[in-house]
Image 1 (cartoon, rainbow, N blue to C red):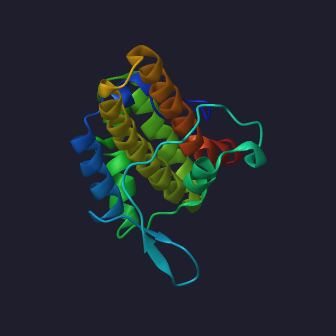
Image 2: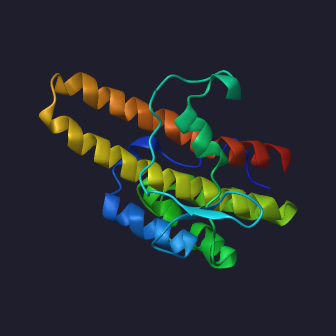
Length: 185
């Protein structure tokens, strides 16, 4: 199998993805322009697209996470076609955007790790889809927060805070997937 410590995204490259492109990838992965999450056995609820933790403080445990971060980790978006979504990750260009290009060794490595791990455990594919949907929702939230700081003062401090919140959110978005990859080796 591949190396489970392989990076699943490059923060700077991922944050350079245009919000329109991130929204298109969310639609591709979920199969719908409207995000729906499971709330119970049969109940569903619509959720907003942008997502960004309210703090950039890293948490030592789930008990230390802020409410938005806990919500992020628990939300499972309904996927209309998981096979298509996983193929978009491993054989399409979705991961390419998270690394800044298809020809990068990191992109190829991440795709290989996901393919190999999904052969060991089917739940890896499902968690990978959820993690990348959270990633792209984070990119949309990051861009919306960035737009709102242009009118505020001090600009530099707020811009750094928004990027730190996005970095924290990305770590949270991939946390469960990374754990599954480690256990599948």
